[in-house]
Image 1 (cartoon, one colour):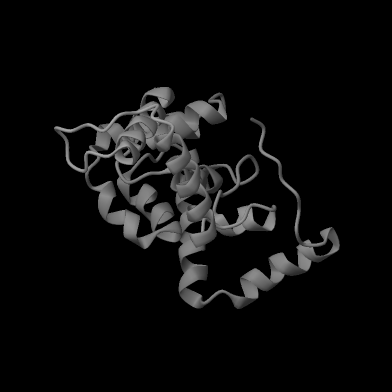
Image 2 (cartoon, rainbow, N blue to C red):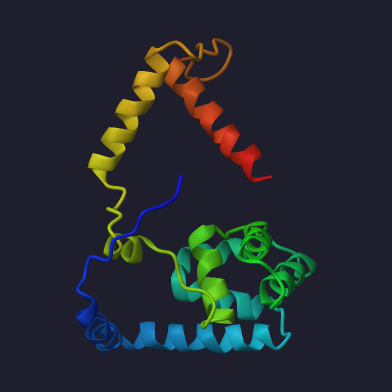
Length: 185
């Protein structure tokens, strides 16, 4: 399936919106962004350290920083080496970063954007919303839940009686999760 994007703001408003973003940002946000792009430049120049990775992750998610310490220096160096290689494909760069504890697709996109701001951009819910993808709100969850219930009710999966929450819906959740996990490998 190919994603469909439709720009929501008027093209003529984009430059103004970009300028407003910076004007409306607080001093802390501005400092975090500056530090992230300085760290990205350092990584681009071969400084594959936890400190540089942390500066970028802190910019996008203060909460995710705590998980970075679960990565060895070797693992960080490997992931950043792949991500910072001009020869790496987007897929290879993202996959290398996703191997790090505490890095999801949004954080990986921020790391890549900080390293190569001319090549990558940040994937986040606000940007997606501006491209016609609504937030994953309660309505989205209700639609998702209704779809999953229809699948579970069709009896394509059976309750797993010896596991916690032995329901078809929970069995479906396990199946979908496992498919996603193994499909990416």
